[in-house]
Image 1: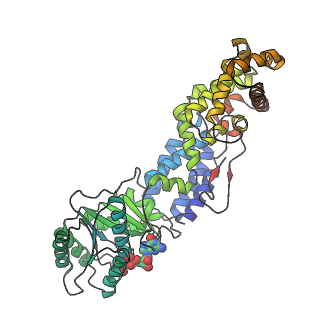
Image 2: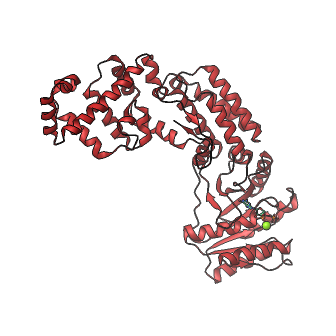
Image 3: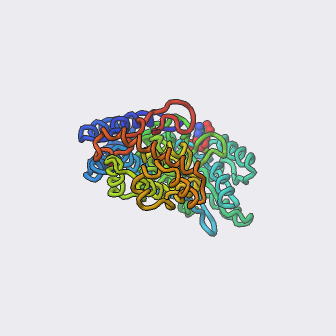
Length: 463
Ligand SMILES: Nc1nc2c(ncn2[C@@H]2O[C@H](COP(=O)(O)OP(=O)(O)OP(=O)(O)O)[C@@H](O)[C@H]2O)c(=O)[nH]1
Ligand SMILES: [Mg+2]
């Protein structure tokens, strides 16, 4: 899969900080050095490497991160955000024109223009319910026209061609009339490629652009190539005002240079990626998802986001201090439950709260279980909530609480067991520095491991 090498290298770099309760500037420097190396090895443009490594450094060393909650995860988040930025930031969705969409594809020889033209036609027909027409403007090789015709036939999409004798701009003009006559609202022009950029080729495409007046000018770029591809892109962009790029061959072991440098060097967004040779192998390009895939860490980030959205640092600190002070009681337990509820029923979230995952049997927060615990705690007296031993000692109290909540004594006993389990965790934590735990509750959990193996999340970070 794309980025395999880069992905494992950058994950190695992140291991320098992951799971650490406290980070020093030296840790960050070590990580940055490895990130820079992994980017250079992926053949990312040097300016891009410099720019982003400076940004990551500045953000990762920010006081609020090193002193805040979960410094290692926050630093990993900084890396992810910057990687997303390198890949283009927010995604640029493809939007067809309301009247007629005219797309010209250009690019070097063998980059995947003809294949992408057919993929795109099929994609737009499927996702936007349009009627596409493929136009063969590669008049230099009869085989190129045949290739497009074969692809078109396999998709049942019409292909407009006038052989190899006519000029591409003339064919383009005729194609526009043909589309009008046949009520085809989306034209995709496949142009000839060259081994290197030459002025004649650029002039030819410029002329085609003048005739077609495209609504979209896409560059087709082979993702297997590194930053060379980006220099090509820059040249094309200077002459053609590209509106986007299609990155092909993402299914190979893409080094990553092109994808990671394109936006920063040219400002041209990547709209699609080719992920195979079949006509269905085209996907919209989501920078953030690609960044997450590279880092193999989507879930962890969602977690950090959720927690920082829903739980204030002060709340977390208070809770941690309470738990380690020996005065942890049912009131606090109840507060924690409410915290979890606010964050939604995300199984992984509970792992941020010591003992909670055990209590919930490692499953997602079960709403009915939550409300059962809630009603049990609510039917306790203030004194019982403050001092759990009262309930534990007295069978009478237990019966009264159970009756009052409409639950069984067994339910209450289960709650007490959960509470005790949590207290045990807290005791175990007693030997740790509380401020440290508040900063990094994850440190109390088993260390993050890098899993090797097959599947979507291989090599990814997991608690
Ligand atoms: N694995 C893989 N192969 C691809 C992808 N896109 C294109 N190819 C292959 O790359 C080769 C070149 O693709 P073409 O579509 O013919 O490239 P082109 O830019 O039209 O080439 P010229 O017309 O010669 O300039 C073909 O063998 C395609 O099957 C992709 O996303 N993944
Ligand atoms: Mg071609």
